[in-house]
Length: 253
Image: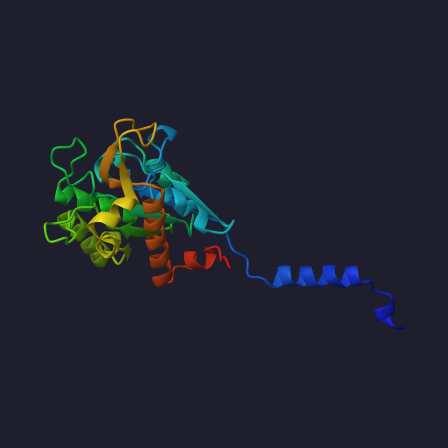
């Protein structure tokens, strides 16, 4: 019997599609939790065009990844814990999930209620790491993203020197994946220079935007462009670290 005369082209196509589907490796759905401060967080409409880098970060991955941004404005490693924002993340963690931890901006300022001593900062980072690992999830530490501050010679200043170094030491001591966002973002700002780097931050002239009728000059928080560029730095580092998460990045032509 000549089966080629009995099987329709549609059936052959369906068989080929099914064969491809079953031969493709199965990817378990995972969640990437972002915990940190205002430089990472979701923003309310009234704050626009202020944008946390965690906002564009959501769109980098395929449908097997959910990015759950728990970062909050003004929080430090200590206040994030005290306000019981961390425990719900721990309770929800599943094996293979990721927790990206980026604090420092509010921990390091002694005049803020969020201030955390250097010793407490390290202890809190270790807590985030160990409790993440206890749930068989993957912690990733990030140094705090750079502020835009240049000296008289036009050189970018390191405003997170002490607390960023604590993050690096914890990553080294506890063998934690590290994204040195402080140094990487400093390098970008230096490349752009003192004037052009303003284009990444919340710099608005008086009357330029209805949310800021008196204007705004903010060298800590990003606009949409700045947030996207910071998110792209994180994305590039995910690839450099060769995380399994990198295999879930959306490929665009």
